[in-house]
Image 1 (cartoon, rainbow over the protein chains, first blue to last red):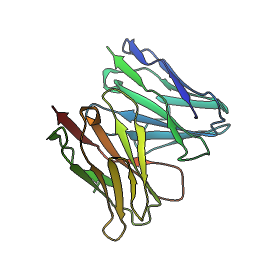
Image 2: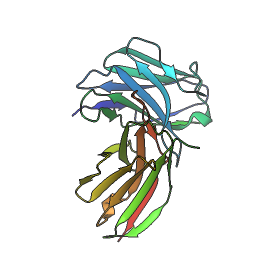
Image 3: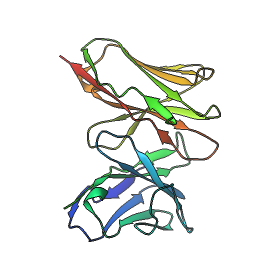
Image 4: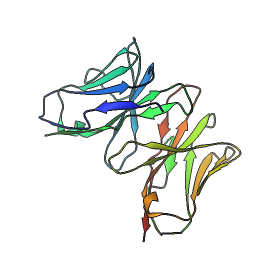
Length: 115
Length: 110
């Protein structure tokens, strides 16, 4: 089945630094990738939708200059958390449209801790 | 009002019990409905899609009531391994975005 590989699975960084999270579709072309954030005991909240070769569409309240999304190829989308702060600590998950079956495949998530 | 609402629980049930979760959605034009399972600190995984006619997969039965805008999930003969958070997920329109409910936590005890 369709697999999305997400890295890193866990990262701890200092406040003010930037962190890049990668999601790769391993056996299909992901023209659309969704980026979610999940705080403890809360549900997934959509941050942005990225389409290959075009600018990402951000949800209301999500700062596009802070959360940089690049979807330059059909198999790779990246989310960069710039100038991270402790309140950015969260579980970040990507999801790709596979075009088959149910159509959505999730990455395994990245747990970001900003200290 | 949240787009997709669920009772957060937790539901604490003994092994073998039958448990039911409900979920309501606000957008009457919603197209597709799903139940996902999420284990602690893991990504969500599709449990089952929900069809208008209702559907069953082993011990799991999902039903959709469009008139009342709610979705249900019934788990029969609960197993310890069923302990997880169950997410009600709706595709609210013809686009591709999914909207997640807050999740219902289930704990199955021996």
